[in-house]
Image (cartoon, rainbow, N blue to C red; front, side, top):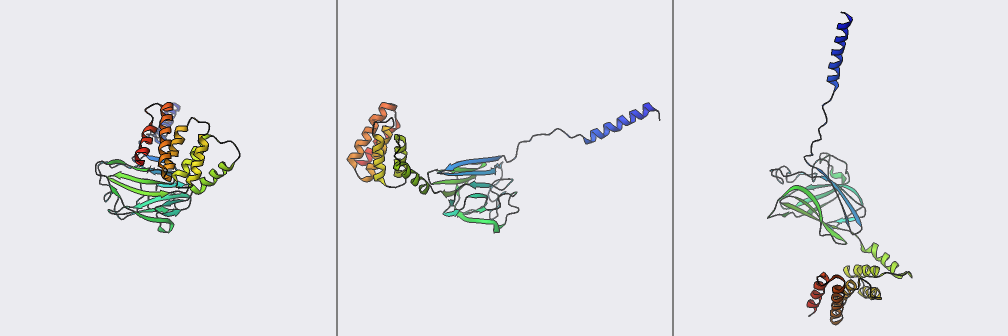
Length: 290
């Protein structure tokens, strides 16, 4: 074999090796069940839920691809993971702060909701009841007039100390009641701020009084803070007087509540115009006292 033929042969062999070792260009396909991270604060508690969202895609969901009576990952791919940074009550059962896998066992009349300490697992294939932290029952709700194509986890009816964690897919909603502790943390802070000799603005008085009113705490203190906030006729006087009307109404002082409501409306019109929502809210207070 002459030199020229040898070089051509080596070149061909080299080309074949390169072609064999080359890889096809990467294709970035869309996920069949897109990943989602949900963050929500309820009261003073921060929640994070990491899960994947499968679609109905014309299939029978519960009792079909998600069998009744079997542990479900509550989504797709990785087991659904929920994290919260304070103790939380789920349907009355208190769970320590931490990260958990959220499993469910769907049923036609009743679902079992499970918090499991093994949060890093694929699906429910390695699920072990020994790792369960809590189990509780929830009644599902059937949607009559709509269908939810993509599985969703949502926080709804959010209040200072509670919310609903809804699992929603197809025509089914599974509402899970959660409760968090707020008062034991906020009240000492309010009391310390009110006891401080430092100057306080009207906004602090309003927030403190509102918290006490909303949580059924000492209304005498709340009223005293409202009156202190009203000194000097601050910009938010119409909000303070509206709150004062609510407090006085709850205390049974109808005349005082009506007078405060009327002041609030007059102040609101001056500041926000005749379309202020406080006018309607104050009218509702007055109507309820007559």
